[in-house]
Length: 76
Image 1 (spheres, rainbow, N blue to C red):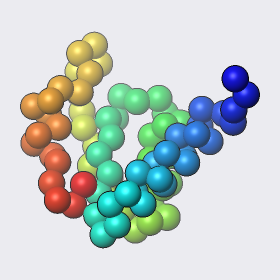
Image 2: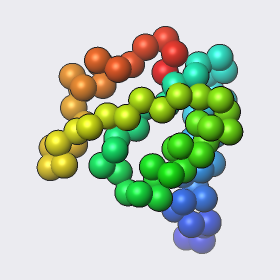
Image 3: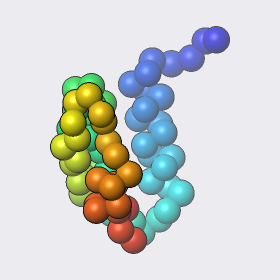
């Protein structure tokens, strides 16, 4: 398969996800994600006037459904 870099694809999917729900102004992401991924989340949020809600999951177990339930809202 030939494709653009992972970072370019993540940038595109973040923008596409934001387009799916116009009017929402939050992105939820984990602060343990790869540094470049976190930078892209910040960049997309800033360019769209959105807020990033950072999760602080356990590095081994990752994000749990309970953690997500606590932060998801009609704005996400």
